[in-house]
Amino acid sequence: MEYLGYILFIFIGFTLGLIGGGGSILGVPVLVYVLHYSAEVSTGYSLFIVGITAFIGAFTFLKKGDVSIEAMIQFAIPSLITVYSVRKFLIPKLPDIFFTIGDFDVTRHIVIMVVFATLMLFSAISMIRKGKNVVLKDLMWDEFYKMPFRFPAIVILGIVVGFLSGFVGAGGGFLIIPVLVLFARVPMKKAIGTSLCIIAINSLIGFTGNIGSMAIDWKFLSIVSVLSVIGIVLGTYTGSFISGKKLKPAFGYFTLIIGTFILVKELFIK
Image 1 (cartoon, rainbow, N blue to C red):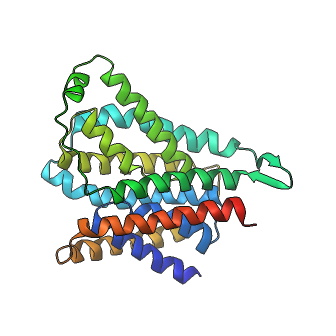
Image 2: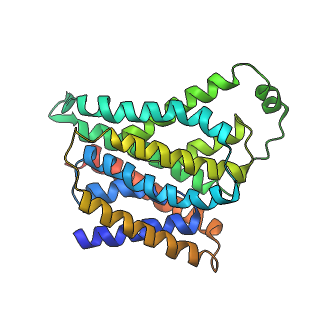
């Protein structure tokens, strides 16, 4: 099973390199159901792996200048403070059993995985609908952009994304990009690069919140991160022959199936 897990992390990196996002959300299910780590450890490890892979992905955008520093600061500062706080203070304090329904114990593991699966379903829907890009010329958004509460809205959304990222160990790119485009009015190309930078910073800072609160297998993390990067390189190369955009909806349906499986597994199968 360990070698199968390694192969799957190459696949995750390959997917990320081929379609440009979404693949890293599969890291937690692989860690939990294939490699049998706890949900708490898996979400922590996932932050490290997501952070490294996002940094590799962001490097190209940084070289080309396709990153909005202003939007990144506005969004990233509240987001990274939140993700660190969640990993450092909230996750270790979660009770082993939240409550009991009959003979069914709603444990910390179940809560984390159900929240993760829900986020996974939203991510799947965003990938399935990827082809239906909205042209942001609506007067409402033009007027909203000029309003004084725009900046507080960005800060609040940064906190929300930071909380979710810290809780489930996922980057949340499918949430960050719409916020940057709609609220910060960052062009789509820059929004992707900015999102990757935010994900890298959030994930790696969030991961440091785990140091001291749980044992970390650095050798395992190093191996998995290297395999994910190899997968990214292979996926990026393959992307020059195959359109990743056309494959994204199909991967969205695959993610939808995995998310549904997690909900069924955690809530109905003992």
